[in-house]
Structures are given as C-alpha cells and as structure tokens.
Length: 158
Length: 192
Image (cartoon, rainbow over all chains, first blue to last red; front, side, top):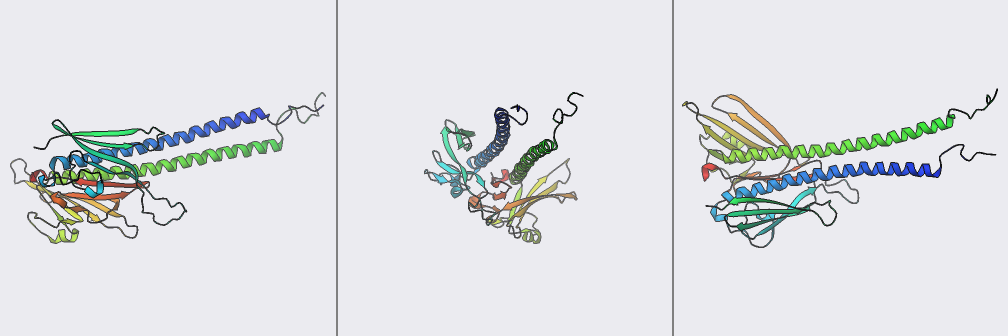
C-alpha cells in the first residue's frame, strides 16, 4: 500500500511558504518606498526653507520703489522673480522638477524636466510683522494629503 | 539484516539535492538583485542630495560675499575681469557670468588688507552643463588662493545680474533625480 506522505510538500506547506515570501517581499519594498518618500520630504523641506530665505531678503531689503509692483492676483513665481510680495498676494510655483520620462521609452531630451508638487506663497500683515506662508502637499500621502505649512515672520520695514 | 537493502531510509536523492541547490541559488540570486538595486537607488538619492547641498553652500557663500562686500562688480566674463585693473569697482555691466566682491579689513593698526571673492560661471560643452567656480584671493598677504568648483550647472542666461537694482544670481542644477533651482538676492550692507 503506497504511503501518501512519502515525498514532496503538502499544499498547506507550499501555501504557507508562498505567504511568508510575499510578506517578506512586501516588507522590503515598503521599506524602500518609505526611504524614498522620506528623502523626498527632506529635500522639499530644504527647498521650502531656501525659498523663504530668498523672500526674507527681498521683503526686508528690496529697494522701496519695488514695493507694491507685484499684482494682487495669483501669479507664477518665476514671472515675479526678484519682486517683493505685496500684502494679500499669492504666488505659485513648483518645488520639484523630476527628469522627464518619455512614455514611449525614447531616450531623447535627457535634460528636460517636468513640474511637480506645486506650492503657494502668501504674505499677510499680522500686527507688527510680515508673515510669509509657504504651503505644499506631500505627494505620496494617501487622501487626505498631508499639507506642509512653513512660515517666517519678519519685522515691518522701517 | 533488517532494512539493510532499503535505499529510501535516509538522505536525499541526487535529484532532490540538485533541486534544493537550484532553489537556494534562485533565492540568493533574487536577494542579491534586490540588495544591488537598493544600493543603486540609495546612491542615486545620495548623489542628488550631496550635489544640492553643495550648491546650497555655494548660494550661501554668494549671499554672504555680496552682503558683506565693501564693493562688488559684475563682469561679462573672466576675460573682462582680468583686463580690468580697477583700484575700486564701478557700476559694471547689468548682467554677466563673473562676480567679484571685495572685502577690506584692518588689523592691529596696520595698513589693512583686501580679500577678493570671485564667482565665475564656465559654460559646459556638449551636455549643456557648466561649472561655477568660487575663488578667494588674498592680494594683500599673498596667501595662496582658495578655489572650489561646483558642477552640473544649468544657466538659461547670465548668472549674475543687477535687475531692479538688486544684486542677484540665478541658476539650476541637474541632479541624478531632478532639477533644483537656486535664486540668491542680497543687498550689500554698504548699500543700505
């Protein structure tokens, strides 16, 4: 009489091993994604700090004749490059410019970039200070997306 | 004599052993592939972050050089800066690829000295990427100059300008992942 347990693995054993391997693979890829997301978040934070530092200098020391030249409507940041913000004005721009990937797989245009992760910059007069607020959203968060707000308070111009 | 002729009692057959070796090799191969990919991705991230940090340092250096300068001037290029032997800087050109900032200092009641900090953009060749070169000269002491180079610079036009009366510099860098933009605005303390 042949034994039914003589060789090979049972279905249960195979399924358990497949599940263990899947969980391990999922864990490794999740760790990678988390590392990438954290690295991107750190770079975005650094860029936001840089943008605020640029505006800190403009708001405090730009020549008087440049004040009020910016429009109160929303404009792209590069259009108003070098102009201080007006109270209530909103400027928009992009914090991240990933390398352009041709969907057809073409290799041309290695130095072309896309625009991603928009930000908004506003100036509000808050009592005796100028309050500059920069807002952007982390792209990889599931809905609702996490909004990052960075602010800098400057003295009013004398 | 019992069981002495049984060939299935212990050990593995050659086929089972080969199958196990192939399985282990496959698993090790996949794990190594994963590890290599992870290392390559980390290197790309690291290179991008390092380049951006270097240029952030350069942006700070340009900001501080302009901010604390006693006089500065923008030149078209290094050639025009070399041919100019001005004792003190003048208005200069409205925009160009060469910025020179001078800092005078006095020490111990002596005659004082001069430190000159220059920034030059050298356009690239075929790949369209140039280099920004920072040079610090010590003409009064004769000390050896300090020179640093910052690569992967993309510049749409002249890097330095006096647009709207504000000394400023604009450039981008092409990292292994993306493009990062740098804008420097600095009103010299001596101009306040």
